[in-house]
View (tube, rainbow over the protein chains, first blue to last red):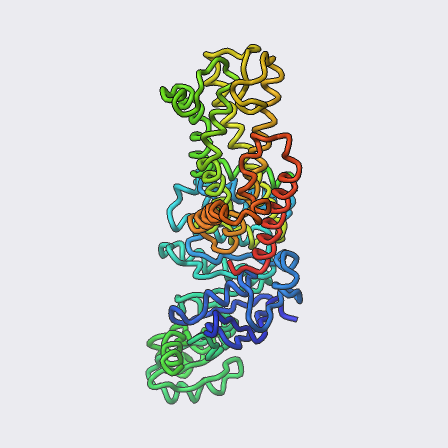
Length: 295
Length: 256
């Protein structure tokens, strides 16, 4: 069973359904990105998944435990940031805040782990300053440090890159990819579709409180885009190479999966000049705009 | 649980309304002991430092102390909502019942802290008048400030301590009511106002004499009648328990 399983989730305020029949699952090692325009229900999903809000229908299972019925027991497996920037006790230092959270999580050897996560989020220099004086970016990074503090098996983050500078955004994306590589199921709501498509496994597109589409990405099988002197001949030739897959012509470019150095070698041997070779990302942003407009 | 409670008490001292309340409670007897109109209002000329604490209770219990208790108790939960730290805590493997229980206990501790501050202020303000035995009353025992003759220092202190404890107990249901409203509204101001409005409405129900003995406001001056305290104390404790349990039940399924 997937560490995070969302079944038929719905939320109603009075007679108005703000979320209806949302279902998805996030396997260990997967990054599931939730995308959607403002008001589409992303934050509601995050609050329901983390047990902060209660659903009007459906259920959320964290490692098989219903987060709304098992309560705190299910949250043993959870790390989350649900607000941007993350909130902390302003009169405590960053380290003291994490110490309180570690105590509440029943974390053993907390001091070493706190130092480790502070270092990972590059917060050691400000660890002993009160969080009331932190910048938005520092608070957000401390929020992520708090989320990964207890080595959760499910990580849920609402707009984790909000308020961060480009370097901070890159750092967060690296960290999420690392956590997934370690086997953690990661659910993240984001507007940064281009960056997330580099390592996310699936993208759920929310619109009007419904999951209008789920796009499966394959970051483990990168695709390449090649511009060659004779594209038709190049495509025909590359189709014959057993190591290369999904070879096709798109306009003047040849798209393929497999080792790019092998493709270049084969074309060079055939005296077909290679003018350009780049990683071809799925244009999630364009696809997302199309789906949201259609929803 | 004890560590959790102590942390909650620590948080209490970082709340603005708590700090303002404690300072106000401390200063009230100091200001009142210097007031030139004491004789006109209370018919009192201070003859002993043991009479100052009664001044503080008489002045404070009318409105100030209930108001400060309602504000602080509402802020125990409201401040966490405003700061966003309630979510931070609820994302940890901590049960909501446990969290709310320590919050209720912290809110119920505040009346005792408030009256302790007031008592300390009163003892400080009473220093110039001395704390020996004296002819007269503390204002909190039989025959008020006139007393029944000579009152030893020990007897005076005992009377004052009993009255302050009783006064704190009469404030408990107001604290519990403010926490209940805070669990409902998640707003300090709305909750404190709702608690005070409820208390004021209860006071207005004086026009329904039959239900008076059932209202918590009927017992707010219990500290002046310690002999008849027992039935009122039970009712106040039932109110406190009832409001607290309701707050726990509401918070258990409340969206945060």
